[in-house]
Structure formats: structure tokens, C-alpha cells
Image (cartoon, rainbow, N blue to C red):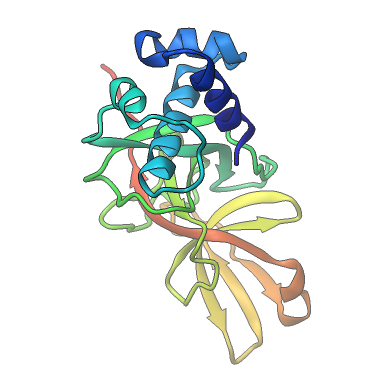
Length: 213
């Protein structure tokens, strides 16, 4: 169980949190982000409804804190990924959460989000969307065995990178291909280095950056 969730359980066992705001709950357990509190309360609600052992956690308390019929859910935001020259180190710890509605992407365990940087995928087609700087890229970490044509987040030399995956069986290599209006060379991974090449997941959705006029 996540440490924040344990702190929430301890707080719930001491007092009725249904009368507290998310910000006030955060102050009580020393978590600054209301979105983080919201996310972990929702996770506890799901655990409780599935009868996983969450001692004395009353459904009525969580119902007052979060609507049961939510139209949105939270996806961990793990920072940035390169669409161009490698410059952002791959991260495993959430910097916050991207809140999206259920119609944008199906809520399944293992999703995470990244912010794209660079223009090497600005001509891609992921369900009709290209990837431009500032766009949110939603990744399914359960899909780590891509097939040719999938768009993947790779970790190469410690850097997170978004490219189109192609398995070149004839030449025993993997090609990570840019799809851009500019000319970017492929990244080639030889068979001898496959064991050091890691796919973090497959891109399942692009949420476009809002352009405020």
C-alpha cells in the first residue's frame, strides 16, 4: 500500500474526514497537493469496495469525499519524454496527476502520462493525433512487447524517448523511427544490445496541449 494511503487510513481512523477539504486533509498528513489526496482517496475507495483489507474504512466517509460516479480519473504524470534529441532523464516517480474524463481513455491499471518535448513526432498518427511539444502522451505500461507500427516510450541510456517501433528481423535490429515534418534519423538498436534496451510502454492516447488565445 502506498504510504500516503496508509496516512489517510490512519487519519480516517481518528476523525471524520468528510467535513474536511482536500487541502485540509493534505495539511493533516503533510501532503501539499489536493490532487494527490484526491487520487489516493479514490484508490482507497476502490480497494474498500473490492473488500481488500482496509481496516475500519467506512464507505460513507469516502462517498462524501469523492463522488462514486466520477466522470474523471487521475493518471500519474512522470515528467517529460523526448521527441527529438535526448535531454530528459526517465523517471519512475509521479510529479503530479493528469486528470482526464473516462471518454478520453479507458481507466486501466498501469497507465502513466508524459509531457512531450521536441518535434520528431509531429507527423505521427495516434488515433488521428500527432505529438507536438507540450502535448500529454498517455502510455500503457502493461504493453511492453510492441509490434512493428506501435508507438512506444523507450528508455535509452537513461533517457525517455517516444518513437515508432519497427522490428527489422532481416537485419536483426530494432529501428525507432521519427515521424516528422523535419528530417530526423532513426535510432538503431542492434540485437546484441536488446537486453539493455527497455520499452516502458505503448502510447495509447495523445491529449493535445491547450492553446489559449
